[in-house]
Every structure is written in C-alpha cells, then in structure tokens.
Image (tube, rainbow, N blue to C red):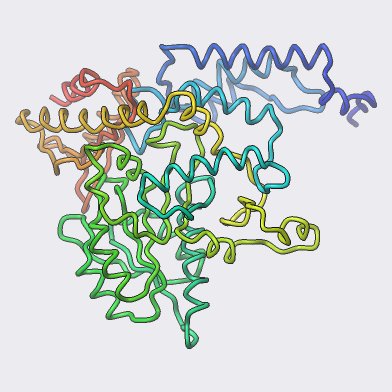
Length: 459
C-alpha cells in the first residue's frame, strides 16, 4: 500500500515557497541557456527500449524532484528529439522561431492567460487581433476581415470548411444528399482529413504541372453543381511549394457562388515579399484562408492564423451554446472560441505579436526573401551537377531534386548517414511514385554552404 503523502503536499505545488523558487530558477536557467546557445546539436531519435533504459522510471507517488527530472529531460529526452530550428533541418517544413517569439512563449504560460473569450483575455485577444488585421491587410482582404489563431493548418482548414458548409446549407433551396469539396489532387492531406471528419466528398481535380487553374475548377463545378460547397486553392503546396492560379480559381468560384478557401499554411507568408507577391494574385478574394506562423512567420509551435472575409459566418458556424456560456454568447464581444473548432484556447498568437512588435515587419520580409533567394541559388547549383536532376524550378522555398541512378534504398541510406553524422536532416520524399530528395528552405540561418555541402555527399 502506498504511504500517504503529507496533507500540505498538494498545496506546496502551487505556493511560492523556497522549493518553488528553486524549481522556477532551474527551468528558467535551462531555458535561457537553450535560447541563447548558438551550437545546439541536431540530435536524433532513439529506439523505445533505449529511451526506457536511459530515462528509467520518472513517474512515482513521491516524485523524483525537479533537478533530477530536468536532468532526464536535458540529457536523455531532449537529445532524442530532432532540433527543428537547426539550419540543417531541411525536411518536411522546418520551424525557426525568433528568439523573441520563443522567449515570449514562456511569458504566455507564466502569465496564466486564457485566450478563449474577450471577458477573460481581452488584452491578449486585442494583441492577437492586431496581428490578424495586419495579415488580412497584407493579403488584400477587406477591413472587416478577422478570425483566430488555432493549433495548425489542419484545424484551420477544417474550421474554415465547416463554416463554408454551414453557409451553403443556409443558402440551399433544397436538401443536398452529399456535399462536396473541389480541390487539386495536389492539395494538402488535411483537406481529405477534413472531408472524412465532416463526412463529405472530395472532388480531386488533376493538373498537368501541379497548378490548379480556373478552367479545371469550372468544369468540376459544372459537373457537380449545387453539391459543391467549397473550392480550395493551395498557396504553396507542402511537397513542391506550388502556388495555384488563385485569380482564375476565384473567378470560377464566384461565377458559381461557391465559397473560396485558400490553404496558405506553408506558402502564403511569402506574399509579404516583393519577390513572391505576384504569385498570389486573387487571394484577396478568398472567403477564408489559413497561414501558419510556426512556419514562415518564425513563431513557435503551434499556431495557424485562420481569417474569414466575413467573420460572422465563422461565428455562426462555431459558437458553442451552453447555460454556463450564456454570459459570453449573449454579448457582442469578440471571443476567439467562436471562430473555430475549439473552446478552451491558449492565446498562441501572442509570441508572434511580441516578435513582430519588437523587430518590425521589415525584418520578416527580409528573412523570407533570404529563403526565396537561397532556393534559387541552390537550384542553379543542382542544375550544374551532372549526377543530379532538378525536378522543377522552385516557386518558393522548396527545392526537389533526384540523384541519377539512385533508388529508394539509396536515398534512405544517404538520409540516415547524414543524420548519424549530425550533418543534416533531409528525409527522402517522392512524387508520382518516384523517390527524390527535397530541401525545405525556411531558416534564415541556413546558408548556401550548408546546402552545397549536403549535395557533395551525394557523389
């Protein structure tokens, strides 16, 4: 039988005691060391059995104490996690939060803020809404546009599509047996995931070059008629960084009175630059859009900005009603929980607000421009190497290429060697059944020398 703990044990976890001060000092000291270090290792995963052996048992009735718990994290658990803000992390879509944003993330937690309602978090919501208004203006949306920060692009896309379907239901003159979404076959996997959750169908439109265009969308809308409640355009696909022809898609959606959603989770941030802005013509006509600050806006995980042209349509679709919530829902206050598939909510937009307010938008534009230019430079280098083949010229920061003569096993061995040597994290990818390699360039600290050095290992 487990011996009872002292009666004041639960209270001690929350009071400001000498023990609590020591715990806070330990955590802040580690956080400062990690934030200010310029040579954090890339690190790599370990097998479950090895982690169990190294970490030992950490959860018990009495606890192991803060110093030992932090030691296990620092020396066992953290080294088994790949460092996503390393400039050599080039797989998937990297993260590169500014030091200001990462540090302020501590403040958000320390301040015990709740971001679900105006009543409880007016100051936090005000700051988040300033960022959302700035983004909406950058994307050319009207003054009344607004929304909310949610966990990530998957939740943002789902929430926007739920609002689109509710708006279509309100307009429908007759019941629809089966609702449908029209999008490119290259659309992000979260669109298909949202469709499964909503129990609707996806009409995947084939493309010749990865770019969805208005003519193909118009044909799909004519075929499927009133059953289509939304068209999704992609503003920077995850695999290739391809931007759909949003302007012509907007024409097709408008002609049929269908909601246009723009999934810009990865790429839409590039619109902040003069270099890439023309690629996104038409995004200002979107009924909703998403962009992930934890990608190319240098915020910590996790944050997605969901913006509606008419936020009232989002509010009507998502507001939750319960007796204990009446004090919130019976007012006209801007409560972020009303605009997406969530209720309890952390004010996850605040680290971006703090970093933007600290550094200014020009610094963000310069950082994104660096990645765009670097992608072009390394694409040029790949084209000069006879053993490599550039799959297509990059539009944004994703560069896809092949090593002539390699199969999937060759790419996998190469990727493993890079990580084992702590040289880089570059996982194999594929397109149309053909394995390839892929650089996702985002981190402002990534250099041409990093990339050419990785290519040299493919000889």
